[in-house]
Length: 299
Length: 299
Image (cartoon, rainbow over all chains, first blue to last red; front, side):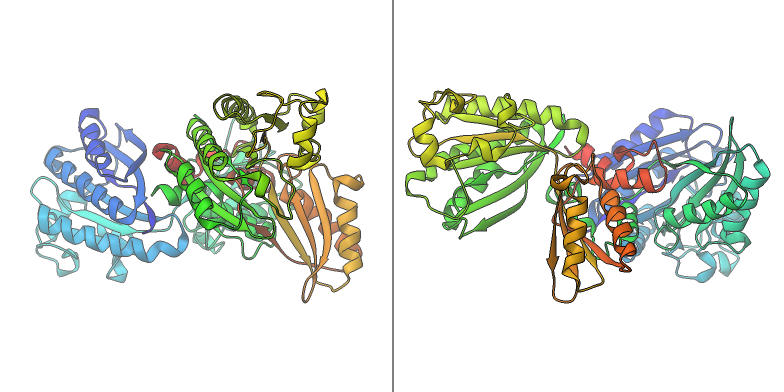
């Protein structure tokens, strides 16, 4: 059994009673821990984070999608965030990098079940993609619910990976994926020079030829500037690597790093990796962390 | 509720069926996770590691002591390791440094109950000591079972903290304590110069005026030398601090650190501290680690 996480996004952010019912459907599965929920009224969208052993998380995800399909009518949905389904995206995330294959398997199994039992067509994205052009979620969701409703039966390039080539009349389609855990990581520079933060962000981000799996922006805070980042695969580029990369460039400009911050949650594995590299502790493993051992005995 | 650990040492390392029964008594408590057990026939002693919320761990410790008192006869016990009781030492250990006060309270409550319900006199040691001269376990256990049996009723300095001043006829006395988690941490140097490892060990250990809460020895391994350490309070001196201290001295001698290793388990808090210091992530907390969140929802 493998501990994994699921972070589904549902197209409802205004009716708390609907989100409550989806959360309850997920939480009712034995062995599932619901860790977080966030609703955004402008986006009219909610993000739920839950975790557990792979089989429990797969069941929880299916139950959540089932509730959303029953409760959300996309023909009456409007919001600022692009969406194509009541259960819009369902990504499975490993807590240890090497477990991504388990998440791909879970994504495929849950996706097939959603199509078969709920009549919702499913597209696989990111690491679960079966076609290279579907890795990118934006490409899968092109045209949103309304556009996909037209295209899905006509354009073979838009045919789903599971289910019939027709959207569910009220629940649309669902993207089911597998991806590495994302770490939201910011570094504050002891200066008000926004240009420096922007220059450093540009220098280190993948889009501009910098570090792989790093997205970065320069932002002005109240009394300093920030390099705000998403590390989309910390096993490829770690917090320490971006810290060092930012520090070198800041020091060249005569500026110090004031502090860094992790926003939200990160997998323990990222800390184990830090210990390995900082302490040259080559053989150190997550299984040596007391809390991880306790968790193993409880799951 | 607070997650803590207990690492009791029992005076039986040769009859596995006895150790099994003690482990079973502990594990029968709801909410207790038994993480490890080690028996040593030469020492004729077993160490059991278990964890859980404070109340469950307190109950587990009492049940373990009760089984040991019932099953082990110290008048017939011999082994290489000093001992004064069937349940010889019962230390409670916080998984987060700030929870040591909880462990002191648990130690005092369990100690009082052992004396009252089992008729075994109890001495409190380390952070649970009520007298400064009992912090050190070796002082408490002076003369072992046989010596204490004579002294306990005669010498007021040897009177127990809980219970009557007489050992239990077969189960002796028990030392109940609270202490920070110990990290067994070794650093291997890319040389066969044993003198260098011994010099560095001497320079960094507390005993010789080095870093507080650090014990260190220089050892020869097959193809390199090792500075072998116990960090008795990583909040006072961290793995990173000793790594840096060893590295500076090794580099002065023209030698590199080959690797370091953590032996056995460490609390996640030690990794959180590492992230805080290496990444200047001042506000980073254990609650941001996904696995810790899951553990919280399960306990």
